[in-house]
Amino acid sequence: MNNELVTLRQARDAINHLVQGVDPYTGEVLGEVAFMQNPKMIRTFAFMSDVLTASMERRRPKKARIPFYITEEELERVEFPEGDIGVLQIVKAINASIQDEARGKLTAALLNKSLKKAGVLSAAGEDEQYRTVVNERSAEFGIKAIESTYRDEKYMQVVYSDQAKKYLKDNLIELMEQDQGN
Image (tube, rainbow, N blue to C red; front, side, top):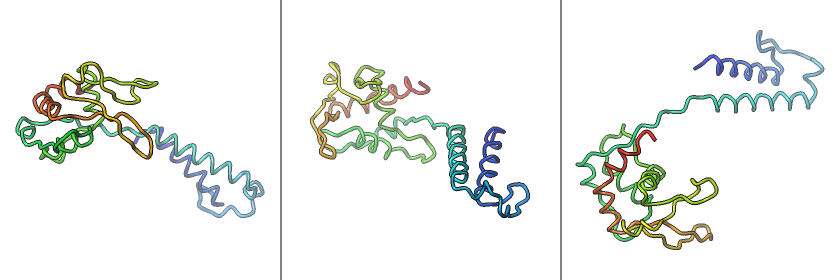
């Protein structure tokens, strides 16, 4: 843990002790300290503790994502469900064939990102990462959009036909290699 996180934790712990009426350095009960009896002061300290906690969370190092990869043998074992299926079913079938539990798993976001980079899918929305959509090339690969409903909201779901599943089995290793680290 870096020094900044240690300092933030010490400051938060000191404030929490004060809120509880305890001297943060000696552990002695503070007794009747007037300003510590004021509810506004207690709320202020509680708020400061929350701010320090949030600041600590932002500074924690993120776990490094284990890169996804799949072997030719594992890819041969992939068994996709029948019919048109969504990206989550695609990812689930691929991950089920990976035998090494310590390896990174494929996510829908990573697969979509790779397919966008290859020009097979596109992004739409305000921030260009909002949602994945089909484009003029998607049909060449057997990927289409169908109207679906989720929680009474209609949307266009990207689905993969048997042709798309074959494309993924034939090209997944190459798609993922081009995208790792980007």
